[in-house]
Length: 553
Ligand SMILES: Cc1ncc2c(n1)N[C@]1([C@@](C)(O)[C@](C)(O)C(=O)O)S[C@H](CCOP(=O)(O)OP(=O)(O)O)[C@H](C)N1C2
Ligand SMILES: [Mg+2]
Image (cartoon, rainbow, N blue to C red):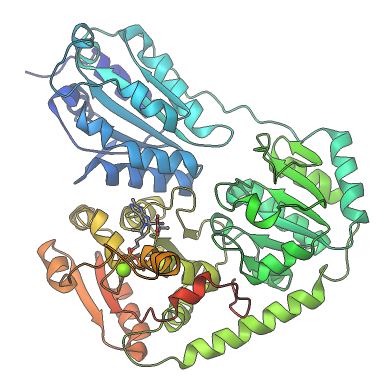
């Protein structure tokens, strides 16, 4: 029996097509099957995944890379509750996602029915918009509202509940074309002029780039600002890649997690800090701004998150790209980077550490040597998707990136398991680019099931697994706090056999000198390739120490 092209599910799908949706990721179920059926008649590619959490990670990765909401489609009850971690991660980290979840018929909503729960109440705290559609005539409006919420301002997650009877009911309503996201203008002219006066008067101003600084137009405007002013700049992990190669002399490096990085010296010495697209979730102001009386200029599309340690003197709220270009035009050009002596010292340290890294031989491999070898492969055409763990700290601090969002890091929820799904997203979003995703041996198994999805999609990515036999990033913190670790060790997995069992290929790196040739070999192979490498984590406790000889880039 063919489905009714005029039912709610078909109207929803026509709205998704109007929104320009090309892929939908999800897991089927009885409460959502009208929509799965309607998709059989659509040009939208339905990608069946192996877990709803990973489907949401893929959608979030697509959102971060394209600025268009990634879409995930799941059944009611546990299908929706499995969205929570992915939606919380996307919402915290500024990634646009629209999640569509099945629901029991409206008449059963208040009963104890199979696979039913108050999903709007469950997801409202971790979304920008959450609603359950209760009438076919509301389908188009609610869909447009969900995309508008997910993609506008500071992007984030939106959820729509889809009761089965509404999806099956006649729904002749109109399709709503996507609402053009209203563009804000630059911030208030007088406020920009006042900010320019403060910055020009400062002796040691420093720019702190945050997650929204890596959004396309904003990143371009930041580069325009740095080209004109040569201001010293630091960045959070999600701002990676904004500083261009020809301004690395102004870049002190990345900050975050522990207040112990070279760029923290820039911030400590600054008499004025200009934050751009900064979200305190990435780097607690209590760590870098406590007790400071210096001037603070906040530039973003939303107001600042005010707290004891973050009270901007000026908030330039508007379209950040327009604001930055207006501000740049008023600022005096500076011949040399401010704090040039300190920057030069940091760059010398960086060179020393890189030379030291190149000499680390043997197996298990030292993280610095692994990062050094990865650096040889990371040119503009490679996208790197990082999972969470001690390895990500070594990479976030030492791996240079050359374009905004070339490196994807979960620096809000710091969620384990994102990397391999993000690798799939990167392959779909940027088919021409090479993709490397990286996880620890703990995080790998959180989403390794999607390796089969990657094989099915013929994704050409290399997934590198740093093997140490533990959840090291929490283990080193336990030892520092309690003098011992607890509950962090687990057993081995044969990655080559695991890969082959999923239809992928697997390689092992036998020692440091084999890193580059093995990775280049993997990058030349078709389809997803797993590459395992045993790492020597003896120096990891130093990641947390108050150390500055370490260098971040
Ligand atoms: C969804 C979720 N569940 C639980 C945690 C998580 N995400 N993230 C971490 C985090 C970032 O929360 C933090 C800071 O390490 C911690 O809480 O200690 S990652 C960390 C494990 C990493 O192990 P892995 O083998 O992958 O990598 P290495 O560190 O290189 O060995 C630990 C388990 N965390 C808790
Ligand atoms: Mg590990």
